[in-house]
Length: 246
Length: 246
Image (tube, rainbow over all chains, first blue to last red; front, side, top):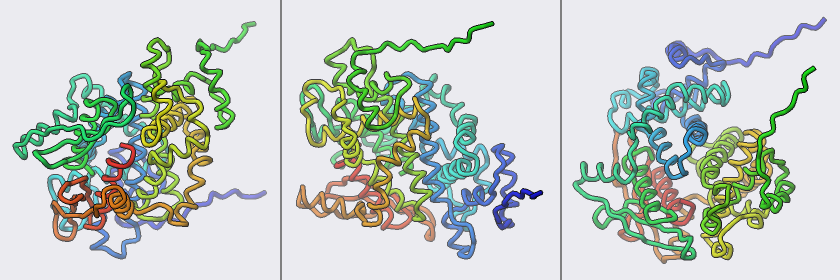
């Protein structure tokens, strides 16, 4: 008789892993490969201070997790809301921007488990928000690799998408033009203005390109099949660039 | 004995479906719900001329397909290339931009099967490129809904990702800064210049925001952990906005 033995991948058990295990309880997911969970929590700045650390930083996982999150949220919106594409895009951006993601990341106490440089540990505001949102996306990437799409999907449903019906029902998302105006007026005492900078295509099926300006400075452009659509797209691009995650 | 009968969903068989069936042979996918395939091929302009047509246009499918495509390409790059996130992003944008997608769409003769308004049928250049790329994404959305992720993934591997090794090996992708410079010089006789417009965070872990300018006009901004990274991001955003699919 042959004895069948499972091949066990040799994963060195790093002391840092002990520190992050409580996070598994919070997110209710038990990783097969704990190093993936650890990697999702390592900010680039930590490796500057610990150049010999054997696990890499979380940026590649973030690249993957961002796309996983995008599909999960997109699929959910497509299946649950009959709205046209443009509105679904607004709903989606109300969920996957750095502000919302960092808020959700704080709720699962991700900030307690991050590995940062000493300098970065004390960071606040926008800089902290981006670090947290990126780590959250990296965590989704790690869950996807270790557990598959369905587990990642259930996780996102549980902690992010439950909020959406409430947001939509109460119109807590803002349309991009109002949001941009509010920020521009609050921070800069400026009202954004929009100008058509290009029209292409035949009369009944034009594509408009619109620029959004703060006084004379063009902040972003947008495209659409009507002026209004192009303006919303431009406002959205301005928000993405200036006040939001890149 | 009970006779078990399958429940058959009532899908009206539209005459338009007959026209598009040869496409199934080309893409080697047989749809269970032919109306999904049909919907992916219907441009908004067609419904302007046929307001009573019972199938909707392809924009919601495009919204879904875009995210499916993004994950398929991202996963492939993550699994097959050890490069840092920034380079993977460049590879990805060389694959999922309107130019490449419309090229692939033409290879499977998608343009023969599109339902467009009479005016739009004769469209050329950028306008046609965008219609084709959007329909291609809608087709991926339809395949995903009808057949699942794995079938969509195999399809993309077969017709899009096979080209990537060749592109990367021969450096046929361009870095965004060179590409922007080439276009700006060709079209406008202008050399883009870059200026740091913000630095936040502690000295060892700054986040730079850089603006890319055509003479004095700011075209786009970008963020990164070094000036170089932020410049590449800015060039990428400029390309996305001005010369590429929105």
